[in-house]
Image (tube, rainbow, N blue to C red):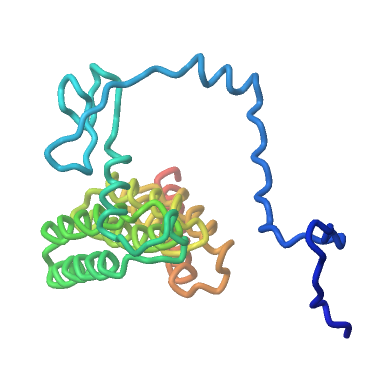
Length: 247
């Protein structure tokens, strides 16, 4: 390989077809004039103020995080600001694989407290712990992967559905079961909870359909298969009673 070291006479050009300058950053694209005009047309200046906590923004006239009169809502913005202040080592925006371990432990511990109460026959107090665990689960920072919240929340709400069923509050049990399904549609437990609630409401046909939908995601699920068999036996007995009455 040839040695690149050489010298130039004073005033002599040293252009060799390459440059030693730092690489230039690519130019930012220019905003679309039409889109910018729409943004400018909708922009309304909002007077802001800081509360005694310097990380909380409020409306200037009323000192509220959420103010209907000023038509502002800084709740989520302030929450994000506080999360970032509390985690100064996080990159901004943080990577989506960061998980709040402390929050996970709090959710698990609160859910376990509910489970212990439910198993001891205290469905009422268990409902309160499940609700508290659900409220914790939805407090995950917005940068975390959504699957963590979905898994934690669906499990907690599924357990709460069971507690509602135990108290014969079938409408609330059904509402929680529907929430579980919306969070994790392919999880058989949500469909099982829905079928149980429907059965409590004497809707055996709808309960059977709920179980069949769950089996479409996991055809060999023993809990659903056993429950479907029980529901079909109940349907058969009901049909026999109806036929006896009609004769």
